Image 1 (cartoon, rainbow, N blue to C red):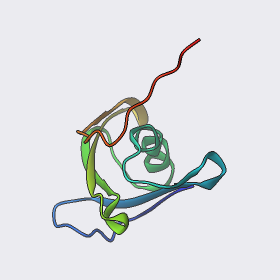
Image 2 (cartoon, one colour):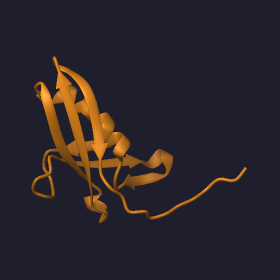
Image 3 (tube, rainbow, N blue to C red):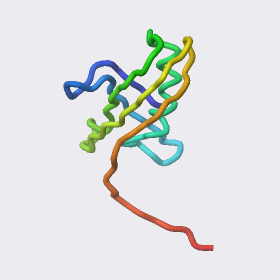
Amino acid sequence: AFVYSRETAADGHHFHARMFAPGLGIGEDPATGGAVAAFAGVLMQFEPLGDGEHSFTVEQGYAMGRPSEIGLQMVIRDGALASAEIAGSAVLVSEGGLRA
């Protein structure tokens, strides 16, 4: 579940989000770029955005002490989503590999 609010923890941010996936063994994820990319579709459906370029900062991970900021840039043309891009940075906390 990816839940969001317009009430943010930090000034200048647009949305506060939390991502839970207990069925996948993820109690809460501090930064979910793929979910923020899909969030562009949610914004198109439920937020009044006009044509043009829109930039948002989505904060995530604050409740778990691992704050992150993910940038979402959207371009809307003729009322349709023409493109969506995400940006951000991450801190490596673990690493793994698979062997055949």
